[in-house]
Length: 357
Image (cartoon, rainbow, N blue to C red):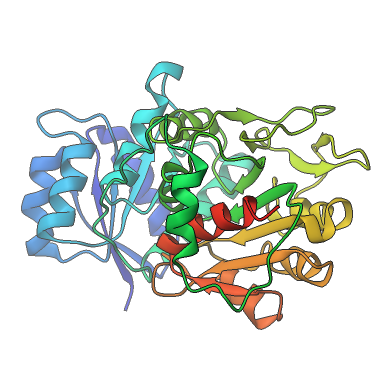
């Protein structure tokens, strides 16, 4: 049976572009189109789509309100297909993820050049992935108060049952890798970190070009720590979260400084989690914590195994709370994971280990 797709988009031109793209795949059937959220809601019970594609800006009912209503009335995977809007508005796209949408994808062009064709194939593959994911009713986490201190948090963290884990001394870096479902997972983790968290965090998120700034803006609303884009030659600072620049791998030199490079993609990804994790293993070894979150594929699994072998602490998100249990599963099967945890238990363990110095 083909994947049933409903397109909710106010532009007739983009409706046609999307229909033409999906028509090239025998595995996808466009069962209907709506020009705004009101029309989309009315069509869902009639058409029973497997995946919904929606824009953000639409008349009468925009994509955000539409997503909220779908998650309450007809929960199913939603892919937000939108342009990377003006800088001051980019974070608003990610509010749809907070409301329950699964992923974001840039609007395709109707051009026939090679780059456009690759982009279109990625969109088709994205629909195939989303057709099989779990849908969660997203509850926005409460931001950590700016005055929250580590001593109070440590009492909470120490109540978790991690007694089988030896104290980890001298942690110098936390490295996180994720893909589909990652923005939502990162928001949950970052929102509960205290303002005086004492270790730098490096995060590699697979994300379409043009959306990184919006992701950082959105995450910053519920995070007490500063979030920055890494730059070559900079030494990561305690209590700061870093993302690699768009279309750049992120590594470390022997002095622990960032090295950003536009070398070819690894496994189709740039930045690639494996590039960062392998560098962390080489430079930081047992002084590192690695976290692999929800995502399709195996990026990060080999790098996490290297960190594990170097004596670092490794954590994988569990299947129950992962949107897609791909990357964590691959790392677990390689034997490179110390802790398999639900999303809600990852931050307490990070806090516990960061203060066990």
